[in-house]
Image 1 (cartoon, one colour):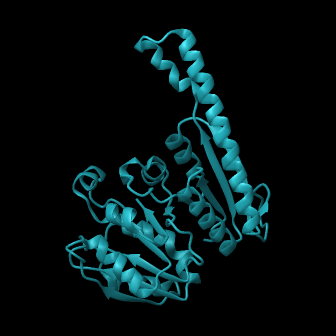
Image 2: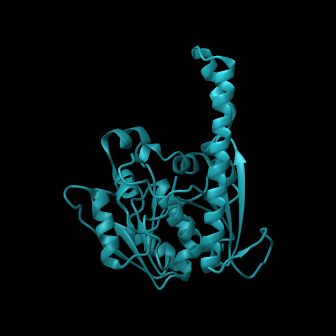
Image 3: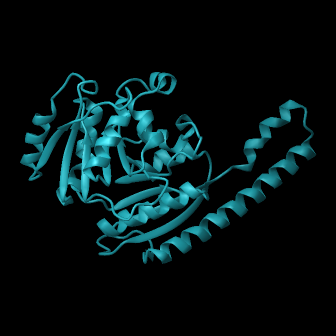
Length: 288
């Protein structure tokens, strides 16, 4: 299945700029449509503070300040969208069938970002989210986790620096789980276009389920030639091992399942998903 609609939760940060460039690059690969969605803060969210002893006038003043700040941010994000779309030579237009070229549109809506993004992602082939900011705990990436856990669709984490190419050399992080099987399905159209595909496996990564050679045989039925490479952990970290193996391959798209163990366990103790999310320097597509 070709990629036709890309959702981008758009923020006015450096990471947001890289995510926008990444989404537009993907759109040009697939002649797809990018829906850039900026979620504005609802000024009414400050109303509950009235129960903490603030007067009605103070609450109203806070709501007005929140509304102004939200409007200014939305205007700045829209300006950024216009600049980057022009730079990537992507046409601003509504999504329409068989456009035959990459297109993009911008929308600003008000509400809770994680709820609205997850809902909109259910009707997108791919959602691109910014890389966690430097020093930011990945557990605070609300849009990322909302798509992973509440959309049923793949999410692509953009690198901190926008890549020049995406999907020519694809790696699959395979451990035999249902999550990694979902990642394979999402990556099929990319692998069918790719110049080279590699399956990455490791003894400490494999769970109960089919092994790498069985996956390679399955992909062959789809006309995809993939080799199987067994990587070693780096410094005791399987996540670091996957990233090192992907870099050695010259990978420009890594597809893998997310949170095969519980999310809570990984956020507290660390894990493959968390390490990759926080340290990847290439586009990473994840599935639950």
